[in-house]
Length: 183
Image 1 (cartoon, rainbow, N blue to C red):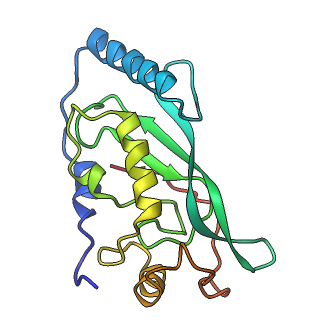
Image 2: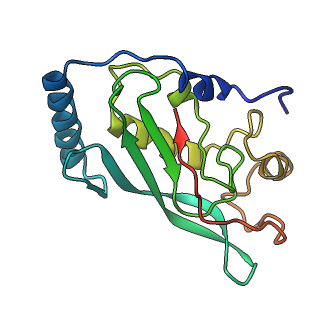
């Protein structure tokens, strides 16, 4: 396991650094372009009227905790992506996992997501590419750079857990995320 703070720490700091803005008319065209790309992609999503918030269904195996405390696998997850005025520049989006999940790169307490795609965000990337990255995150957990150390330990000890019948310890109490992650 990596020592020190996770690599995604710079995303927390980016929140405090003044980010550039596109001119309003260009930003609005970019938002419309994002929506058009998502419509054409076949992704399952909903968007608010100003195209700054998207709720996605991301398909892929993941662990969750049932209300009775038992652990199971889910094949469908809800994720919210909010585009801030700084979008499409780094730090211009919030990502929160809405479905409770036991994953080394997603904090179960608040749904914060730590993935390389957000760390190395470039203005040429799209929301559709972010969703593809989230799908990859589900399929390929990175326990070496965890936000959830207990999940990281589990995935290190059970590297084939998502394809096997192994389940994480049932004492993990996952809750619905309350805080959005500022990229």
